[in-house]
Length: 40
Picture 1 (cartoon, rainbow, N blue to C red):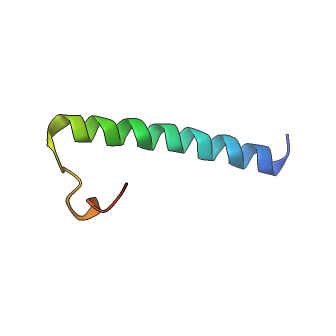
Picture 2 (picture 1 turned 180 degrees about the horizontal axis):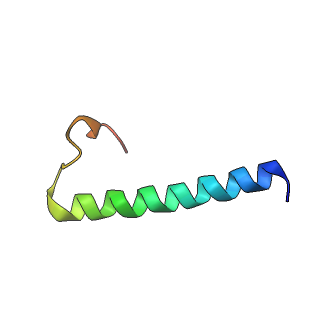
């Protein structure tokens, strides 16, 4: 397995994890992130 493939899989897994975490926080109650409110 090449390095680029490993990096791509790690990035994809992180993106999915971050997305789920972000959605959960938004659904939990508005802007829980606070300083990260500028994040899309």
